[in-house]
Image 1 (spheres, rainbow, N blue to C red):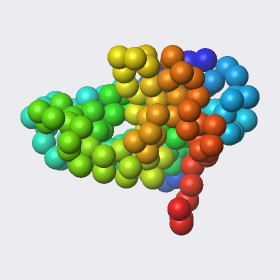
Image 2: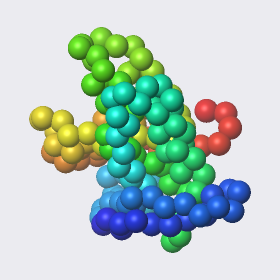
Image 3: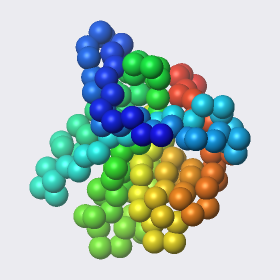
Image 4: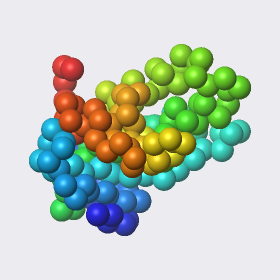
Length: 153
């Protein structure tokens, strides 16, 4: 189920808005009973540089601390993902360790990405791993929790 433009309150009391909240219909294949993600669509321009890139990641990370009305705190998916933005700047993105670092670091912050993959369809990536895909269903979501972590990992 897709809920468009949801509002919430961050930990300092300010209002926030996210593009969508998505919920799975059937959670039996997932580790968690309630599988829900916030979804933010944004693409910094090629010429926005490192400042635009880091502001985008910071905004998404801030959203993990928002109490979304009717949903609570959620992991946030960006579309396209931060690593995809790095990939577009590289000629051979699979060889770029920065893209891998971006995926792992943002995953530890409760952030993932939505990608369209040729053989998988729409795919949710968390920590650089396929969490779920349109074609193959739940992958890492069977063993990894979608609950946000605080403190030691």
